[in-house]
Structures are given as structure tokens and as C-alpha cells.
Image (cartoon, rainbow, N blue to C red; front, side, top):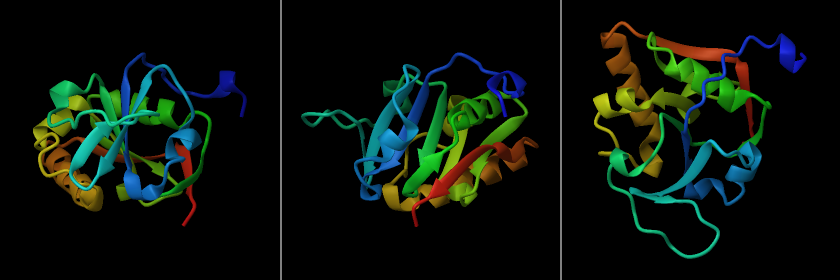
Length: 162
């Protein structure tokens, strides 16, 4: 498919990608460098910006992260299609959508939510590297109670290495 034929609504926004430390140091490279993406590493219950040197301070609140959309990744990825983050972001920003996942992996392993949806389920409270699936289920229950969509988009494709 050519870029001009894609029906993807690109909305300028900041994206925070939350990666688990146990999935390896190269996860950010699978996604690739982008100006609109900030990477964060979750080690246990400690969330820190992903930097090349040094140890940045731990983050404890969503207010410390400048992002409109949060993408949680809890599987070792082999590949993403070129516009995966664009599609996830666009869908997540839709007010009718509560949470959106990529196809090709379990929805609990790669999903995106708007800031206010994440805030509505407690923000970063209780988020840990071993409980990303629980966070997804909590978000899913919350958005379904609000009659918002839980979506898996075929336009965003990921392949896990496992």
C-alpha cells in the first residue's frame, strides 16, 4: 500500500512509549527514532526516561510525562509496520475509543491510550513491568463501562520475537 492510499488520520501529538526492561535494550530501535516519541523503561515498578547514559530520576506521576498518548509494550518485538504508531495514536485520540491494540500480538502486549483514559484508571499507580496485562484489563473494563470502544486495528501490525 502506498502512503497516499492509507486512510490514516495523523494528528500531531506527543507519544510516550513504555517499554519493559526485561524485553531487552533494543526495543526502542524496533520502533525507531521519531521526534514525537519519548521512550520510558519500566523496571519492576520504577519508570524512568530511557537515556543512553546515566540513570535519570524515577517518575511517579503522569504529570511528569509530556505526552497525549501512552503506548505500552510488554513483549519483545521483532518488527512493527511503518505506520503502526501513527495508527495507534490516531485511534487512541478518537474520543469514542478507549483503548486500541495492534494486530499480530496479544492486545495486552501492545496497546495505546489517551492521557485522560489512563488518568481515569489511576494513572501510574500500581503500574509495574509484570502487570501490564492487568493494566490493560483495568483500562478495558473502565472504558467499556463508559461505553467507549476497545479496538484492535488491522492497520497497525506488530510481530513478536517470542
